[in-house]
Length: 444
Image: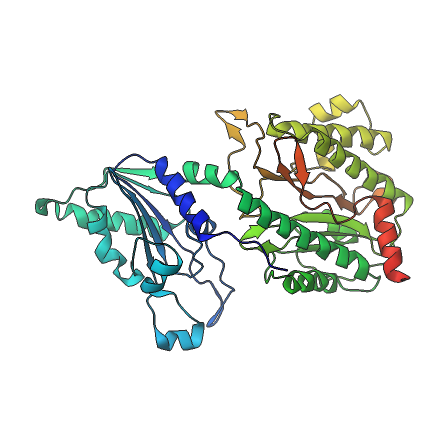
């Protein structure tokens, strides 16, 4: 199956849309990611900076993007590593300045080794420089160095930029709204991620190690074109499911426990993000079923309300209401639901938000409030919906049957003109569906 990807024409259109928001005589500066040392002389797998990739599609380290807007011309300049046959023998092919002109639609390109020499010239006449502050310290230092060099040459007629402006509000607002091509990539990432979870349910057995279940998911991701996950996978059996960011994944999966898996693949730099919780032996106990169906009820109630025009916070409030009322019905919380919500008593069992933006980063960019008010959902946004209940194993305020149970159910949701589309719907999430799938896997 051919995987969808983002075209170079779309990357160019993004640069054009960003430039359209800039004043005349301005320049955008976006650095790439660099190689990260893992240990000794070994590097971790390279992953490009999301902002840089969003504007370029270029996935080599040690590069720099400039988008310059004059009175009548917008120019795209890409600095990159030069071709080096000796280094390429060891580390692989480089596009080089010549290649990026052809393959990445740059108007001009230079070796990254020339950046400090050329930037003062390229910045001459620019009034405003935009870059993401506080995220690339070395770039901030370099920008200051370029401006310092220019100030020394004022007598030669150089015109030095007078404003340094934060780029993130413009660029990250663009990234929040997904194009048709992005949505297709995210649908694929969601489907591959979903089927990885299906495989985990089918392969799960008491006695497996958590990391063996993780390996099954990673096998599926790689077999379908996704070499890396979008984030460190969580495979938490039993009480480990109550640790929200548990990634050790090194304990035995025990008969009678639940296992919580939070895992998603990355497809062409776009993330899937799914959580499912299911019984290690294929059958929910009464207590597990009661809590699981409460979490699922909360998730389905939220999904039923998601549509353009509702405030971001509204869905979280729905989840809090459903979960609090359910915990009262089960005797885990005592009191009137609204009073328990007002005093935050539910947070002992449901301590995180309902979800987050999803895109190139698993916790993607984009503001949740506009001028102090929760922003309204709009078509093209993608979010997660992930209510949960976590009862610590040492919580003696509840009956023993509930202790050490952690449950989360998470799906990726696209806001559409009519409502929403669940991009990860193909992985089972009702008790009956999960038990049926696991039963077939054990007795085909």
